[in-house]
Image 1 (cartoon, rainbow, N blue to C red):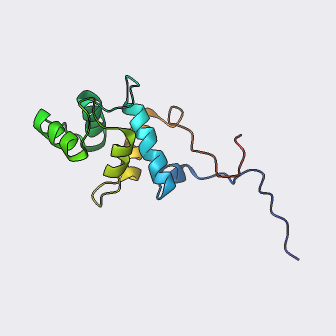
Image 2 (cartoon, rainbow, N blue to C red; image 1 turned 180 degrees about the vertical axis):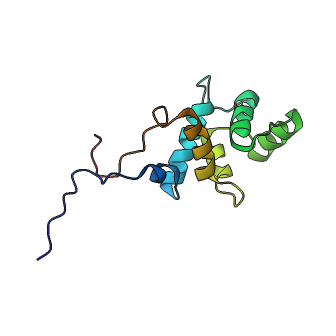
Amino acid sequence: MAAAVDQSEPPAEPAEALFTASGPAMVDKAAKIFEHFDKDGDGFLNLLELNALQFATAGTKLTRPQWEAICAAFEATPKGLTVEMLKLTYKTPQANVDADYKKVFQAIGPELAPAPAPAKGGKKS
C-alpha cells in the first residue's frame, strides 16, 4: 500500500526554480517583467519603459526608429506595447524570459522580487 502524500501545500522550491520557466510559467514571468517596467501603470510599455527593460536585460537602448519599427510590427498604438505583445516577444527563439527575469529580479534582490504564483489547487502560505 502506497503512503498518502500530503498535497495541502506545494513542496518548497529551491531559489533557482523561481528563475526557470516554460509554458504558463514563462507567460507569468513575462507579465511580471511587464508589470515591473510599466512604471506609469497604464498597461503599455512606452519608449522610456521599454528602454529601461532593454537596458536592464541587454545593456542597450532602443533608438526612436527601432521603437517605431517594433510598434509597427505589433500594430501597437502610440502608447506602446501591451503585456500580450511582450509575451509574444518571449516566444521567439532568440528571447529568453528566464535570463531576463533573473537579470531584472536578482538585481533588485529576492526580497523585492515578486512571489511565485501558487500551484493550481495549492494554497498560498
